[in-house]
Length: 507
Image (cartoon, rainbow, N blue to C red; front, top):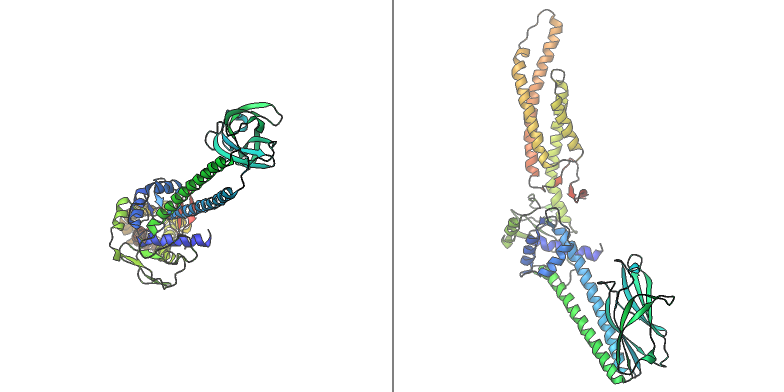
């Protein structure tokens, strides 16, 4: 992405953030239309919206990510500007040709109108090959446009004009196909005709057989309208009218492109930012931050106030709720403060996940103690359940690969093992603690000591499990406001599932 496009992306992101929508929010197409209507303060062009949505990727529920929509808007801006530039070039060129034609010395001319062809050779044409014609007149040749519709029976309806000097000029028309994969042309056949067969002013409209390069007749025929004009005044008036109409048609297309561009900009031209164009070198590097409960302000790296974001997948009702919030709930970053692109969003996200990372580190310590105590208790009871839970939880935390719904499962399993521990203590703690030495005092003293230590460790494990369950509940509560489709880890990276693979969300 070029620097200008990145500036445009930052600006569009800021416009959405002004309304309370971060680029990573996911909304329905209906909600996105409501957002655009609200930003434009009128109805956003529905035909243009349909074209943008067709090119915008969606998830399995049909939701659209605002950041993806911003990318499509930038691409549409580029395409429309390219079409406008081409239209301008065509208008300038045709105007110059019209001027030359107006001032040109009158001479005899041949007007060839290539209407279309039928029953072209199927073996030479397929979906990637598009037919076109090249008109040869002595050393001069002119090409038609590619036919895209019925490629076996194409229609061109283009007119070519050549000045006649001697009347003995060699004239023929080649029918070719252009292979879109390798950009190579292949000859289908040729049509030949002579000028002496034509009468002045008469239009000769007929079908001509097509011959291959060896002079053998091949499949298909070409429809031509030939006219020899010796009354130059009539011809040039007709030619001027044709060129003027072409200029008017191209001007209409250009106006339509500019109108689409204006409609594309409509949602982003109200409020504090007033761009003349989206892609300009001096696009403002402003970032706007919105919070659901209260505003946020950044001053450099210092956070004045911050709360954690809700889930970025927004329902239609939630979008309406955000759009109906009073203007004072939206805070803008002061334009005189230096903000690197996307800096505040990254700082905000890092802050929100710092708390989660600290909670996960504390959880990891409790899990380690849980694992060690479970291993110690294995000499008196088969504690495979505890060890399995501890190992699995440790691995999941260590591999940075678990989701918040797993925490419920861990907590339930720990509570079940807690009930088992309480039952075990109720059955054995009194008996083991109150044992007396009998025949072998020294050996039994060591056994009683070990049993009592086991009882104490078992009580410690119960307290540890209660603490760990509370910690898992606290961790779940801290993760709850974050994205439902996130995977969390003890490290500093947060990942987001996207299209079947995992991409870095914060780098």
